[in-house]
Image 1 (cartoon, one colour):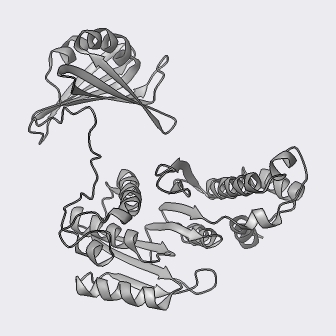
Image 2 (spheres, helix red, strand yellow):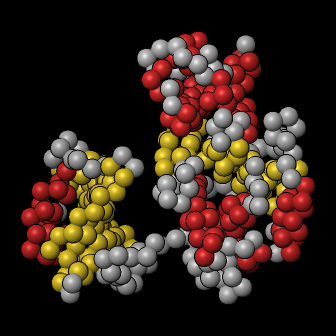
Image 3 (cartoon, rainbow, N blue to C red):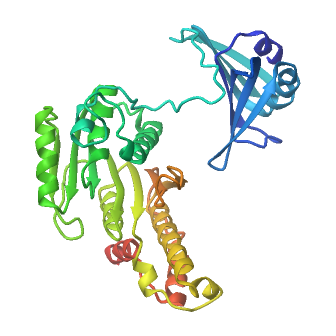
Length: 376
């Protein structure tokens, strides 16, 4: 396997399914040119972080012979052909399939980010919303917002990109000016070619009216915006496949997650914001008292505790949950995403630990209270 890979002119190699002795969860390789020399760059993924390693041509062979056998699946992408090696019980199986790669390789060591939504792409709503200029260039002051919505869509693409249903329904909680809502609609309708129905909820009448006007302008017939208080108003009772929320404020995030739980929504993508609830009610009560002494530390600990409890509740309700940094802190201080997928039935494993924490420190957490009251 290794000798064949070394003799191939590959565009990219991915090594996944680590076995005993592997340090990283996944590795991708690509050829690069550094200071005029042909080299290889390895991107090594571990605990939601990426570590880069540049290897000269002479170093690459020895490195590959040691590292690649530590992965049960190695995919080699060449122009027109993908070769996959599967290792199991000391034996290697090899398969081939055609691909559409033409052999164009970006050999730059510092590549521009390959966004799903590229600058210069004709996405008219982003012009109306002030993210793109009329010639589809990124407005400088909106670059952070552009990165956020791109990353959000990338994460949706990772989980939902292979949904086989021809029609998908999505709810966006606290959609605000709806940068994300329009882009998610564009992604499914224009990029994926699926019929998508999206409802965006927000409290502000003028914002909702403007978003509906833009949706009508571009004939986005299955995209609508509704004035609603998600904490108390009756929301859609249709079958929903995906719930999203980007910076829904404070307990609005809890009501978004509770809606998903009640409706058995398959996919949830939520980036919380302004987690004030626990910070305002938590008191001293145990070993964590030292973290409550200083205001800014107390605020941050309370925010992390809030999102930890949310993730624990989702797990109890049958979701597989990841808590990830969806953008760098430099682009948004509220950068944690709860990404959840419904995989099983209810199993109350975390509830006793949440009860113990609430009893010791005297706080309440809305999502847990909502679920608990429903179950009782």
